[in-house]
Every structure is written in structure tokens, then in C-alpha cells.
Image (cartoon, rainbow, N blue to C red):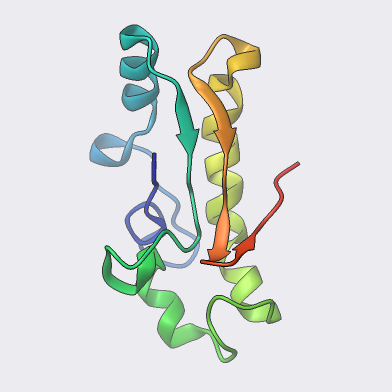
Length: 115
């Protein structure tokens, strides 16, 4: 299941999991249906969406290259990823939830470990 950085973090300092952005109803539906979830929060999710899911505000507020290890890009996605972790942690299989794995990615070739 992909999550979209631009949707969930529409402005700097705003990470929103309410209303149509809520992930919990999806986790609940997966659990009820007996479907396992592999969570793919990005921050880069793929070319099927504008900017690969990168929040549009980042494209104008990051001086370094996107999808790299430059400090301002890494700083930009930290709050979003922490929000995803907060939402996902109680829904992991070890907690009785449907999430069996997470695969965060900065780019098509680079995985980001979440501990």
C-alpha cells in the first residue's frame, strides 16, 4: 500500500491523517478482510504520480537535489515519515494488525531503514 507524501504532508509542518487522509480505516478494512499490508510510504513512491509522490512544497524549498542524501531533502521528509511510523506501529502484525512489512524509499534504487 503506497502512501502519498504530498497528500499527507500538504505544507511544511502539516502532517494530516484526518478525514479522507486517514490510514486507519484502510488498516481496519485490510484486517477485516484478512489481507496483509506491505506499507510503501516513500517519500518517493513511483512515477505513477506527479513528482513521484514528493510533496510539491519540497520542490521549491529544497536547494539540493531531490531523492538524494542532501540534508535539506532528508530534513523535509522526516516529519512525514515519523507520522507514518506513528500510524503504522499499532497496526503491525506483532500488535495484531495487518502490516507485515514496510518498504520506505527515497528513490527507485535506495531503501531507507526504519527502526
